Image (cartoon, rainbow, N blue to C red; front, side, top):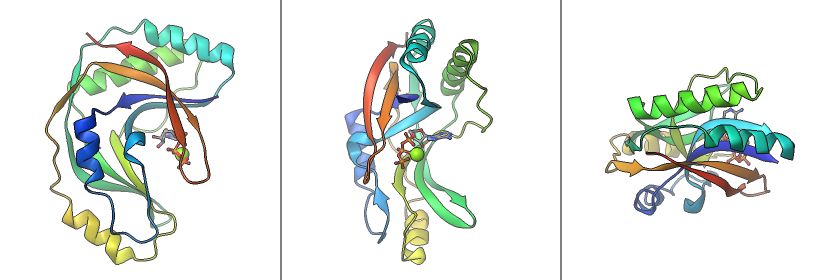
Length: 178
Ligand code: ATP
Ligand code: MG
């Protein structure tokens, strides 16, 4: 199965993010039930390894943390926007948890993550956007976006089934913080 470690978002935040969606022809908006913050992408693993990963994540001890969402950003490839997202402040608590997850996964033999941790919540995938000016206007128009801080008291192991339109995520395990 395809796995990743992340944070589910409280309903209030998802509702607020859903209010941003729309107005960019061709963008593939993430359905609100799919909003999440990826702490660590794992990818395809066999079930015995998923079990080891679950054991390793279960052993993590960390405090609940406050999530602060703000601003809009994009990931680009070859000068074209691929992903549109809301930024998440790199607070101490979040970095601490992400570091613990990374260490735990390396201990069970996963290759180190080479990309820099860039916390975000993906709003849309933009491969086939037809109106680049609409996308630019969205980023400019929503750059001051801020959500009320929310406390997160668990992190999750998600499975991801890639679909034609949208991936389907399922929470395979939850790990309490605190
Ligand atoms: P799709 O690939 O169909 O657009 P998705 O990206 O939501 O769907 P996955 O590819 O399974 O689904 O990714 C799950 C999560 O992990 C997403 O938050 C995605 O951005 C992130 N992710 C995927 N691949 C990587 C990677 N190589 N490095 C870091 N994060 C990744
Ligand atoms: Mg993907």
